[in-house]
Every structure is written in structure tokens, then in C-alpha cells.
Image 1 (cartoon, rainbow, N blue to C red):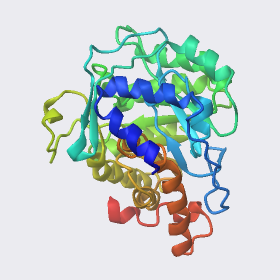
Image 2 (tube, rainbow, N blue to C red):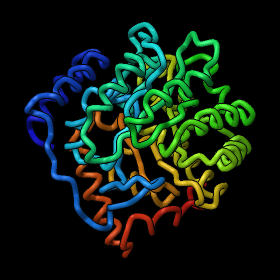
Image 3 (tube, rainbow, N blue to C red):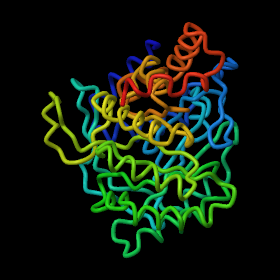
Image 4 (spheres, rainbow, N blue to C red):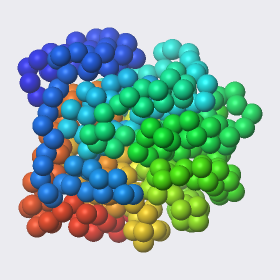
Length: 348
């Protein structure tokens, strides 16, 4: 980490977390944004659902909700990006404050509630983006919608021509009863509606970490039946186990380091339930190359992160990418695909 980045992170820590995030997004669109040559190691190049990625380290949804900073994020060293979530109509989300740093826990709690400018504005930006790496959109539903399943279909219809993949997000804890859509019958109907209009756009499913083994098995079965192209495991958690920071009492989804173990367990269970036949993307608590490598060995074909950048800055991305390359070489893997799932039973 450079001295400038260290000073910048220290300054942002004094600000309200949501204000700091907005400033960080604005900074990405200035000449001071990172411009990192993407790694070219053949061991890192991979493919998920037909999408070619220079490396398996991606940006999770929520960082760039309105697709405002795609070009500079592409220069930060990621192998793929996910923006959003987008809803059919613009919505302000929940009242502020709605984002809390838990510094002692290397974590954050948010209850944003799908705040975004609406799919039409987001789709317009996506239509004019660069195409250096794959870019996906997280699909959401409006809080006051009377037909949330239709909302996902509507966002997909408007955005599909401009994205490389779409993620059906039924796992955010911040929209009331949204997680009810993870039940088998509702999930099957929802995924069928989205996949029926997807054309050639791969459809991913993002699930919660707060699932029993039986629920994981049920989701795996529905995903296979509806031919989902990949599953993202996982979203934020409602658990507060072991937290130290006083903000642990806040409502919302917990992300960051405490999520690593539960999200990796769900990932490994999914890998075993699907026999590795559905690509998985591991997200939750990744703060180092070792964490990313553990997710891959647990069953992830690619990984995503977000919260760790709040504490470690954008330079974390190339550090993880280069560290992964070294770990693969140390274990004599020719390509990252060869390491996927080799230790799934140990994490499940």
C-alpha cells in the first residue's frame, strides 16, 4: 500500500461511512484513480459460464450501485465486475444512517435497501461502458412492488443487451420478505421467468449464508432444474456471533471478515450438492490471497470482494491476484481451474 493510499484511507475513516464511500467513488473518476496493469499469468486466466476472465478476482455488487465507475474499476486489476443492485424504478432506500463500520471486526453492517437510480439510468451507462472484462448487473425488486418476481424480469429485459451476466439477488436481508423468494416454489417460478427472457446472457443466483443444509440442497436442485449458469455464495449475514464493535446491535446485513467461515461452508456444501456441475462464485470475508485461495479450494471458480477494500484500499486487488498466482505455482497447479473444489469436504 502506498503512502498516499494509506493517508487517504485514514482520512476516510474519520467520515460517515456512506459519505466516505461516495467520495471514494468520485475519486475513482479522477486522475488519481489506480491504473494497474492486469496480470497476464496463464495460471490465472479462467472462464465462468462462458465468460473469459483474465483472473478470478471480481468486484461484488453494492460498491458501484449505479454503474458510475466501470472504466476506472476495470483498471484496478479485477477480472470481472458486478454492479447494482438495480430495481425497475428508482428508490432512495432506507433512512440514513444505514452503513456502519465495525473496525475491530474488519466488518461492516448495511441496511441500504436497494437504493439506486433505477434500471433505465443504469442500463444507459452500461450501454456506453468499455468491454475490457466481463460486467454483470445485480437484479433487485422495488420495496413497494406488488409483484417482485415481475420486477426481476423487467430489470433483466431492459439491461440484458448491455451486460455480460445478470445476478438474481433474492438474499439481501434489507428488503422485507425478500429472502422468502429462496423457497423452492417461489425461487423456481422467479428463475424460470428470468431465464425465459435471458437470451444468451448468463443468469447467476445469489444466495444467503444463513441456510440449513436442507435449504442448500433444495436451492441446488432448483438451480439445476432452471439451468442457472452460476451461483454466488453468499450475500451478507444476519448473524452477530463473536462481534466486538458496539455497532453489532444495528439491524442489517453483516459483511467482512466474520462472514468468511459461514459463507465458505455454504459454498463447499453447494459444491458437493451440485457435484461441481454448476460454477460457483465465492464471496464473503476475503481479505487476502490466502482467503481467496481457500474459497477456490472449497469450490469457487471465481471470487468477489468489497468490504475488505474499506480497510485495505484498492491496492488489495493486485496483491490478492499476484498472491493467488504464487499459491497456485507452489501447489503445482497449472491453472486456477485445477484447484477448484479440491478441499470442499474440509470446509463443508
